[in-house]
Amino acid sequence: MSQPLQAFGWDDRVAALFTLIDVAQHEPGRVIRTDRGSSLVAMERGAVRANPYALASRQAGMTDDPVTGDWVAVVEDPTEGTVIVAIIPRRSTISRRDSNEDAVTEQVLAANVDIVAAVCPLDRPFAENRLERFLTMAWESGGTPAIILTKADAAESPEAALAIAESAASLGPGVAVYLTSATVGTGLDGIRNLIAPGLTLVLIGQSGAGKSTLVNRLIGREAQRTEAVREGDARGRHTTTTRDLIPMPGGGVLLDTPGLRSLALWDAEGAVAETFPDIEELGANCRFRDCSHDVEPDCAVRAAVVDGTLDGRRLDSYRKLEKEIRALELQKDVRARRELGRTFGRSMREVQKFKKR
Image (cartoon, rainbow, N blue to C red):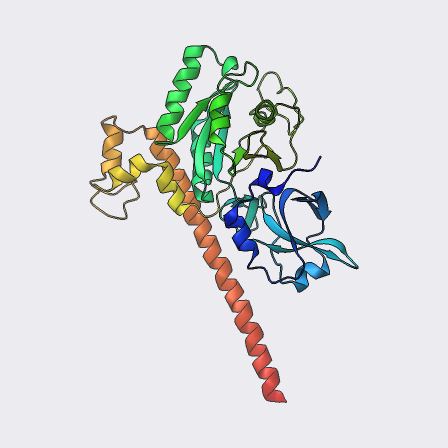
């Protein structure tokens, strides 16, 4: 059964962007899922398979690959069938560095998300550093971060679950925390209220965190396949292998994602400051404006660790993320210089060829 585009977040802002597309007889749609060689696109006439790599796509000037959540323009080409010819400018993106360690490229995981929920399960030890990394990714996206603690019924006790919720709140000052159990059905109304009509909420987290089970309970049907986590170490299986856009019954859209084993940040310099506002505030009192909070004298951040005002683990996490970002920026700079050198070299060769004529 087809659903109107309003169910996938269509509004006046999106409609206005489509008026800027200079392609005849295009139809608007939103990418529900990307597969190898094609995309499943929600349109007014129903979900269709569309080719984003056709000759017509390149002739229309399309250079980026569509991802789940993208708003796209689709045409019917007489020779290539249903083709994506344009991607509407993205208002937000979930990105990470490509998992290939030798590559210095961005991998966009999802687009046009309003709320980025870091999902943490309570059936295993609470990983504070991982949550801080997920929150940094959320701030980097341009969406609004949220924290969803799943499997509250699997915690050691209700008191232990509440203690972890308090700890999560301290790691994300100002970020809403939702304590849930999809099995029991507690805490789900808060998330339903979070996803207002027209908004898109994406779930990010490790495998086995309970994202797919949570989606099924929120929408009231078994849309996503689920499996039990492995006994002994609570490791999850990748039951979700694609990024799927799923409309909520009362409006709003959910975006489920596969578990993230690696989460290398991409462009998160400002996002780290958002994740660690307590350290940023303390850092304003350091002697040096560019203090790294490592060996510099009169460092207010290290002093706060000594007097117990700041958790030393949190400072270590901050330093690790900052170091990772600085290293990535250096690699980006090296790559840009290489590309500039190649471009200059090609230009000079063309000049020499012209002189010899």
